[in-house]
Image 1 (cartoon, rainbow, N blue to C red):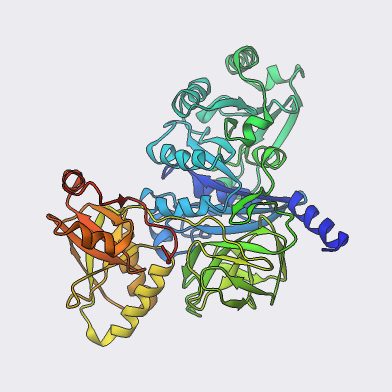
Image 2 (image 1 turned 90 degrees about the vertical axis):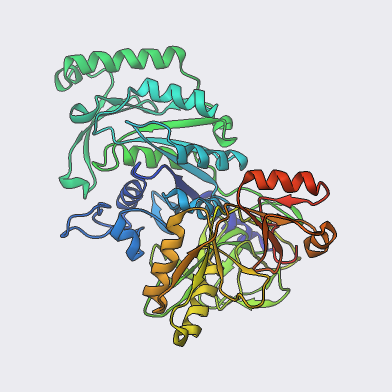
Amino acid sequence: MSAELLNEIEEAVRTRRNFAIISHPDAGKTTLTEKLLLYGGAIHEAGAVKARREQRKVTSDWMEMEQQRGISITSTVLQFLYDGYQINLLDTPGHQDFSEDTYRTLAAADNAVMLVDAAKGLETQTRKLFEVCKLRSLPIFTFVNKLDRPGREPLELIDEIEQELGLSTYAVNWPIGMGDRFQGVYDRREGQVHLFERAAHGTKAATDTIYQLDDPILEELIEPELYDQFREELEILDEIGAEFDMEAIHAGQQTPIFFGSAMTNFGVELFLTSFLDYALKPEPRNSTLGELEPTYPEFTGFVFKLQANMDPKHRDRVAFVRVCTGKFEKDMTVSHARTGKTVRLSRPQKLFAQGRESLEEAYAGDVIGLNNPGVFAIGDTIYKGKKLEYEGIPCFSPELFAYLKNPNPSKFKQFQKGIKELQEEGAVQIMYSTDEFKREPILAAVGQLQFEVVQHRLQNEYGVESRLEPMGYSVARWVLNGWEALDKAGKIFNTMVVKDVWERPVLLLKNEWNLNQIRGDHPHLELSAIAPIGSSK
């Protein structure tokens, strides 16, 4: 590789920042996403999730069902420039039924932003997603949201994060007041107080007035009681708070904390500028060739998400690829690690939720969209040069199972096409009975909403009605070592044997008691709650 190209890649990596937002439903994730785009200049007016009729729809929730319910149920990628940085924001589903999609997205992220509702503190889904981030040692940046509403005391929230998540905390800014009395935040980095003026419905960037902490006019502008409380809490922070530790942040051991209100735009831009300073740039990744630096000369990447019909007019299928090393260029030919085939990447796209535009080049840390004519699967590696493969992305054990019936035989082709494409993108896991006379697919999901989404999309995107027939099982376990191991085990009672899309044996059981019974009866049968990675296993 020439010195010129190496410098180009190094500079591109230096200015890349990539992150995913994790939160419990209703913490304001979609609203925060919109406001980050607003400050990044990617949109000119932010929409609210539960929008008034005259307001525009939010950018990240592009699926009709998301807009109807005011929730995020798909992952999207939003790319924009801010202050010289190329930012890749990986927007994840907020609903717990889609936590597996979130897990896949976190596999492509370098940083995570944990959004916390100031009134509710840490909630169930936030804790679960934090555990996923912890497994990957992702740096976690905490944004305490909804300060424009009554909430818990900031010191109490910080203590909860430290005690429950085992994280050291450092408050980068500190709120002045809360609810109707929320007046702004103090930036501890710069020693400045930002007093905000409310924007109409939070659709425009908030305007703020900046004062030095020792400016006497602050005592006139802030209510005496609020001012005294604010100064007292700052003293407590200085005395007992942890020191700022960049190494600990990058190791996922300390979380910088920011306070604000995404709805009214208070503190959002302060968060964004600090995040860009503190966040990790693209990092080395484990592969079969060892750890590869993002400046490794050859292009490599992996598929972390597939999405069908983002553009209903063209019935397209898009593979989301995280660029891991080198430089991507339009029309380049790459090797596909799983199949050994060569693939020409002729229609790359820069992603912005549902919108796309043609892309000429990309670098480590970027996410690109590739047209997927049935070639790619989640977890696939593509590469130039020496053969390699990145760690795969596992599937987790579903808890709900149902036969999916097609009541209209004349729509057989559309039904099969819809099932195939929705299965490819991981909207739901699909299994099949080993009984050749039962050809209906078995939907296997983590939550009920996944079933609803599949049926809704079959109807809306493929014109196919469907009917669900629930099955009385709640536990799935993959049989390690395949059909041979299952045959050796002999008769297994109180289970149903099915096969996944890779033709691997899966046991469906009614409950954990049945599972423990099988383990007792067949101690040599190895079972896994996580699907083996890849089709060859």
